[in-house]
Length: 417
Image (cartoon, rainbow, N blue to C red; front, side, top):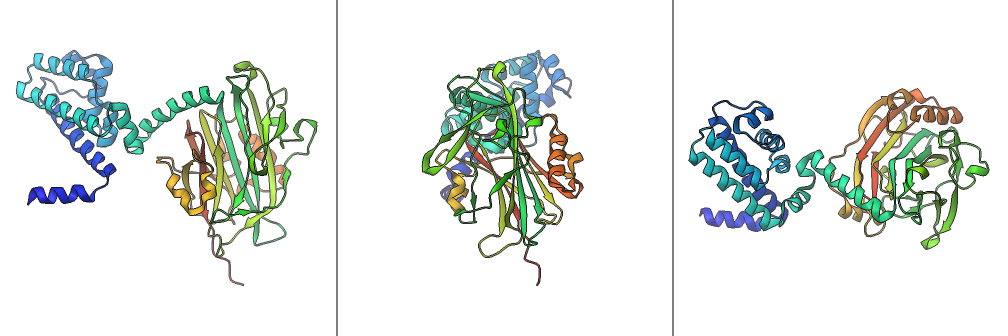
């Protein structure tokens, strides 16, 4: 009966569930076995340094063993399983300290069991951590994204210290049913690592809930155009000197791309630029049969060490509810143009929006130079009261490239009358 029940469970479970179940069981056994050895030591180790001293284990290996035993989330613990040589050194030191051989054998069996699970499902430890994804915790995900950033910087021939995308929404002063939308975007210390690498600064599109393109109003630059920002609506005061130059390049399906002009490679060619524009009567403030949500889409196309997406929303727009965030892979085209089917391309992530407070004073960050000052400049230009805007932030270190970061607000019901 037990075997039949076990067979039924395995048939009903997905391959991912089977993998996670096997990993959970094997890691729990390893944690318990090592914990029993630690309990049997002459002095119970309260810190990794204690474990290193008692069993004569190298400091980094002792830290891993200590973290493995004390990590409450068994999937996060997968990052701290020591290698075979470190396990053997730990057992040798524990044996010399007087721990019984049967407890040591239990650790060997548990370590072998975990390695068998890894080989069966993933082939190696690195692949197992990739398969666990966000189950392995934010630090595990961050390590994978950092490695991807280095690789993509080389492949793309360009990288940036930070990418900024800020959205600001306020009620339109002539039409109570509509709101105005501001987009501020740019890069901090973007540089080519290959002289012929193109640096495209994004394209915009508005769609309904089904992914059908909409025709928004014409956008207007925040600052008056000049010879330096005739192509891109630069906020020149907040750009590096000399002012970055751009050129227009024709792309597929009638798109036109704005591309950073050629310049030196490496740090000597690093540049910072910020641009800002506003669309009057950008969209309806209230839900209707075709639109129940407002999704803000920020596209990550350039390898960057940090991505910051802020939404500043007037207190009368969208209501007090917090937004949701999703990150979508664009490896197979533009996932956000597929409407509801885009959920197939959603990436696992532990990233969540953070509410910072009200107004420009809540938005301080060392990542974007003079950022509060730039926002106040924009609010002054538009004659909007910044203190009435709620600030929501999505911050991602080493974001996946190419991807779309989507921040979604639920639209309120149309008021009576």
